Image (cartoon, rainbow, N blue to C red; front, top):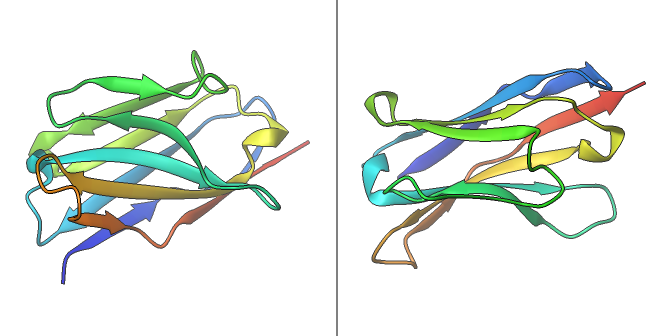
Length: 118
């Protein structure tokens, strides 16, 4: 059973930084587009950033200039580097890997909590 696993969440002060990691087993990550999503309390899940298998990157407007998504193909890991964190970044962050050609091959991680405190 393929898995996608997030790590790196935690509690950080406003203005601080945190880096999340998304790693996988059983799938060839280089065949997948990978996105980071988040769900804040009482809100719908939203896309934060994604990177295609070819390296095309998109960011939500709310995180542009503060977050950086990066995939390390050699390690089958996608990182989300988060800087200048705000209270409104508090959410559970999820990683999603979708096969570039077979879009029904989609895997979600369990999520990792990010809490930004004053």
